[in-house]
Image (cartoon, rainbow, N blue to C red; front, side, top):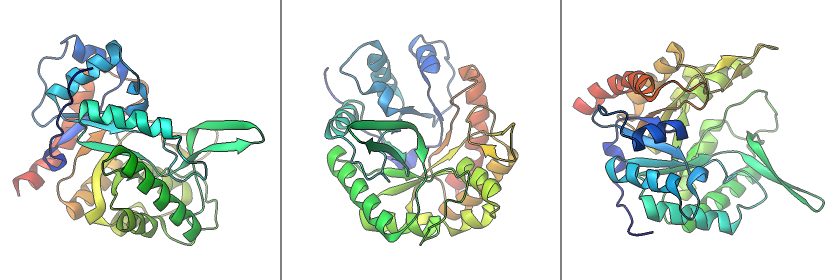
Length: 291
């Protein structure tokens, strides 16, 4: 490996898209010549935490031409089992290599020890928002930030049931976490919409309670109705709904312009179609940047 890529200032970002591996191949092949100004890309960090190879080379090429964000799925920031040091070291090496403008992960837990077995669950599991849990998350976020040498953005979770036992509303939990650690917040609007529907809450009130000054990035994504219940599933396999776009506009009215990312993880359309949908995000940001 040679050289690192200097990060660009995060607040200059406009609308971006989650860059999945088939689309990375399209970019690497030069198959999409007309890309909108202000575009940036976000990738799942764990797909590139390797020593080398063509996939990492393609990512370095993207990072040299466009702002790049690393979105992790493995830190398990709410877990009692600490992130392995080797994982943090690999993430640090990737950050140093591609110079991301943003680095983020999820407010959830994924690891558990059962007897002699160590399990990593491929989902973002909920937890009661107690003062004890807040102290644990503060410790985990601080450890991660120290290890990677960068500010971390922490994403709010999706909820499918009220597990109970909470001491703090989610917005207050996030605000105290940001204040204690200096981390930022990645607010996923689809997660709020899905959670409000599933728990019978007011999505607009949830948006209005968020600490606007701590928001460093916003995600929008699609969802689907569960075939066997009244739940909405945070599936990332459909276009963004009108309700989610409206909630995104509501949050942006409070925060001012923030990097706004369109996520799609399944039923992937061609990159050109995804870029066209991302223009809806760009149109939300245009008047805010102009002001």
